[in-house]
Image (cartoon, rainbow, N blue to C red; front, side):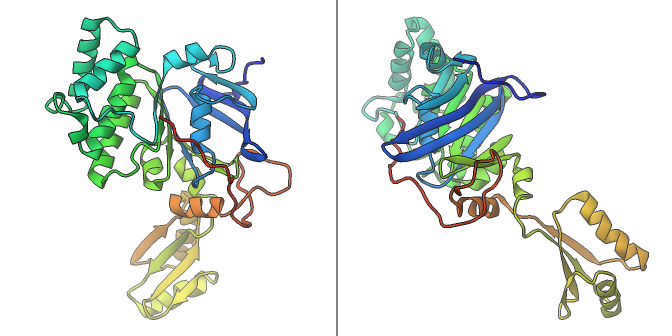
Length: 344
């Protein structure tokens, strides 16, 4: 099978895919998606329920066979060398793989046995990870007594027993309280600082904004947009600059200098469409400087990832030829009827 091409000028990929496809019966879940995830980065895959996020994780982690496409993970082809892929990765699914009937330490030692670590090495690795994830004091307690955040930390600690360099986290903070979610974010940042690549699926837009180097939006089986958080925010309209004045005369003169601005005479404010870029702001200020007017207050609003998500996932794939990484035009929402299987 040909090797997936590396985009010109980009870093070697920890995960790469060209034309990845998967269907269940007559329902297409993944319709030819492309991925390029540099080593040591966080890549977030966003999408509504049923968009295909879990299916993508299961294919990339060799749990499900793709129907088509060329895919490499850690430099190994998932179709011809799945064992090497499995040796290089760790997977934490939507639901915890922790056994609540045994202690946290016993869960860790079980994973060490599954990785065929010598007994002494397994105990050393387990103790180190339990300490690293702030679980040492609870190590001897049944995992069923752990809080949701503790179970999630134990789940990821178990994933790290084999020292994977690529980790798939499928909605890792679902159901966690805000404090536990922020703790999980700190853990993910530390992993990346150590050189680990993280492939993250999430429905929390704030999570992707906080963690991801690049974000892809999956909808209708296709990646409808991909880029940094800032790049994605510029894809949707709604950004504006708001200027407020304390002097009514200054407000009138500014409105004359900026005829395309919407006036709010009661609050002495003007609002102009803007992408929030430095060039756009400079153009506005230059027009005010030209007539000798200075605003007392300037605020910039740019669309957030919520705006991007709703704009892009309110659409389904049109019948026109697919253009990768470009947002589709909004139509009626649609999603595959085949439910995604849950990753364990």
